[in-house]
Length: 434
Image (cartoon, rainbow, N blue to C red; front, side, top):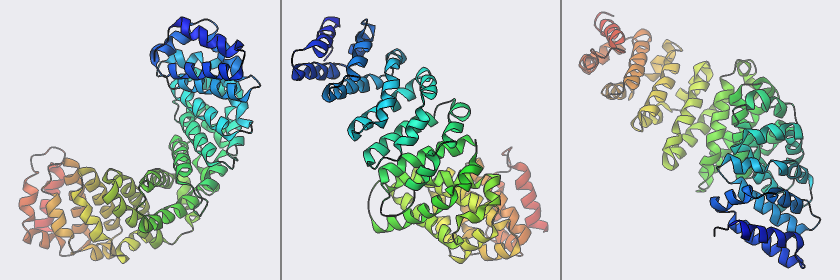
């Protein structure tokens, strides 16, 4: 329902001065329903004193009125109009104060309202930082209520995604107790809650992507916690059909991938404190799960496998000893993006030298490579050529076997492609003349 100025004024007057609490509360309920419409929101903020009245009701000592006023603000916070969101600025300090209250429902509402305001307005974020939003959230994260923790994860993730977060927000977050508590909430075990874990895994992802101080997160046990969570997820997808585990798998895979690319992670890689086989086996269980449930997330798992195998002979050995090359090759038909990542992982293995190439060859690899050379995607073909070059270099007989399977004809398809010409020519020379 769309309300005009007169109706809004009437509701506010009743909410302020109604003779009975039920009448006052009813006026705010009607106003809240009206504020679900953008037209009513615009009228409301244009009305002089409307926000001041609402903030006055938010700070009243009557719990039901307070709750309804907060719900009205929550409706306003959903607006995509910056003017509507910024009209709520006078309420932010009170919303922060109420995070230390006793009602979990009220705290949850304040957190979602703050999260909505944060995402829409830099002016709101600029005001919230000196008002102490980071310490307020750090205090909140110790709540025993899962609904509060999930709402907190939402508000924090909005804050961490702000364009100014790396300079102005993430250093404060890293300097608080939030990261340690986030990692505790991601510890596998009976207390792990999926909704809460998903929110905080994304929070961790945004912090890691900022590269402000990933070494600190590693020293706080981020690699170890995420590695154990990966194993736990692999076990969970085998036990249950629960749709939703992929929602947690995605940020966990991203966090691990990005942490492993850090130079600091290389120095303390042992902190994973896991046998290589367990990590690789868990990752393949998740890849099979994602193939069935959400193939669009396969690149996340393969990117992690790429980062694991790039600088680690032991992870490459695990891949071979667990007979995972063939399952990996089966993924080549999924998409071009997946194919490039699969071929990159195989290049990581082949780069480790003759002993590794000997175990890769021949198996189903040669026929798979002849298939990928028939692709029209330049990146897929380029990565296939890269792998063939390594195999020709380290594996005696690979070039001969390639020629016998009409390999030269497969290469000829790409002789005229500018990005591939040099590599095609080099491979033709190697195949023919050794």
